[in-house]
Image 1 (cartoon, rainbow, N blue to C red):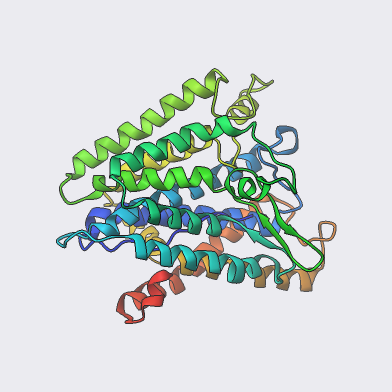
Image 2: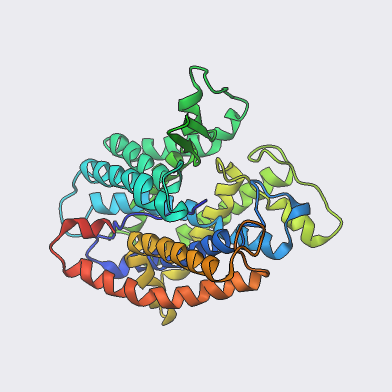
Length: 389
């Protein structure tokens, strides 16, 4: 039900060298906002995973497809940011273990409290979603961070490329491996009783691989690497991801559970080709989204365009923006439902997708000012807890 967000790791004193990270983070924050407006006010047009083309208009398909970018980019940047924290510019390296553990546990706590309540206005069912997945991935990275970096990168690649081969593994509720597998690879209820229901909705195994890959690529943003070298490497990785995707997806050989085929129109054929599984994220899903992320990072390196600074504001206070926009959406939905009543069955909802986009743009502008204010506040404040937001 939600897209992802990361903790603010940007501790490198040469902030100009990693401005592209905050800019990319800010861009996907706004895409995430659009997707969450869709889930609040267009939920009567539910989108399955992967999407059923006969039930989804092209405009809705590509709106949802854009949101796929968010989770992989944020998890990757979490790993990258952890390396930057462990190697601050002009200072001696330090262990990120304690930092990752504390923030990972903090994210898990946020998931089961503030985040869950923001979606439903109650705690009838606790959904362990993206914040939980990022928190556990950070805890996993904390325990792995003492290993050689290249070994971590290899481990991450094995997970990212290999987890699709585990799709045949299944456990039924009550079997000995069900709970662990529901957390790692398949979604399912961990507890389902009359008084407590907890569902693991975001399988974490692929994200553990992505965060390791992000940590492995951290030195690319170190002071020893020139901007031109960084740009060329990011472009290489981006185009390489697309090439591997084209081969795997084009041949329907590996990397996605749902094969594609030529449809009756070019648009439907493209939709079918790009119709990837997110829960858990397939290899093709990760190749597409991180490939785009690499190219965007390369493009944002030379951030001479003024609007880039606006995006950077959103990326400077990611968790604050995340929590704030969820509660703004909860209040707006409650208000609209009270005024107009249910308009789509039992739900209040918009008639047209353009209304979703319009509200997202309005909220994007409106939330800029409190986000900018909080970004300045946390930089000045002596309270460490504010850095978590």
